[in-house]
Length: 397
Image 1 (tube, helix red, strand yellow):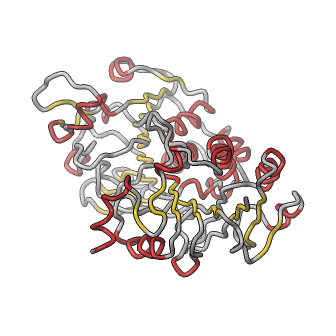
Image 2: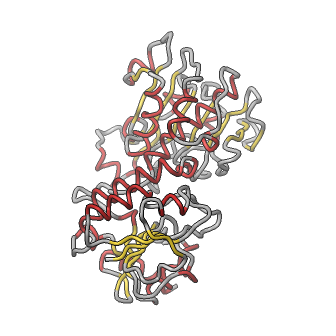
Image 3: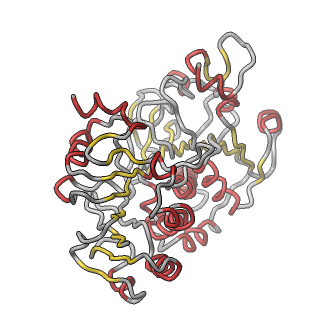
């Protein structure tokens, strides 16, 4: 079985890769039936010579491979008929900008396995870059706070060589008695907390966060039912919220007067209440000075996120009064970090983490009819699979 590692060609170019050179070497050693070929790239976070030095073949043409692994969408004109592809297709939510891509994939008789829908039997996702989005997003939030308060100055994440250097920069962070709020308890939320714990910040419960003052920095991690409540005040549970989120209202405002930095790492479901609105931000009790929106839903549940920011320019300001962009250093302006491709700032570390999960959970079942792969197959044999029949109207329109 021949596996090909694709060169990322979507613009802007992504430096990440599904497998590092050392991971490729491990796969070949542990799975004698697998051969790996890497498509040459001048942008990948690992250069061609690093693969070659691990005895991995590098070439321009990998069309002879059976299975092709990428990260982002493969441009339509680069697709090869009758192959199996793994990448993030960004089609399962009927994204208009990838309608033609999906139609082309089907017409070329490609088996498309989407990383986003590879799941364990309990429904949890196997793969994703959420952890590193959280790790880097939290760092960038602290970067913004240091600049806004002049308390400390750390190197932007994208200028750090790797996670090790970024963690070294964290030693420069100086906090006093700030309160930090984190929403979300999935991969992203855990990644945020991973960074905060590097600073030995104390985690507290909701009651203490809201009622007590501390002479050291603390953080609170809350989930969806901690900042939403039923409109009719009846008892709530997670399943009820998922099925009836329009019957809920946000209770997030109870946290805003106590919070200095807010890290948004939650998943937002369509129809759910916004955490806070632009009107809420104008409230005198709104004390948050930095919003690190790792989820980055523009003009959505976090009202201060009015656009995505860039890796090279990660911070902008939100003016409470004008409800528009402004200089984030001004006193009454909230600093917003809303980079929407955070893992790209540490491509080697993010790639290594991703590759480890691929090796552990996917490589061993590649040459099988395992239900994990079948359930994540969007199309094969020139048509949509049963699980993705709901996309029929999308590709026909």
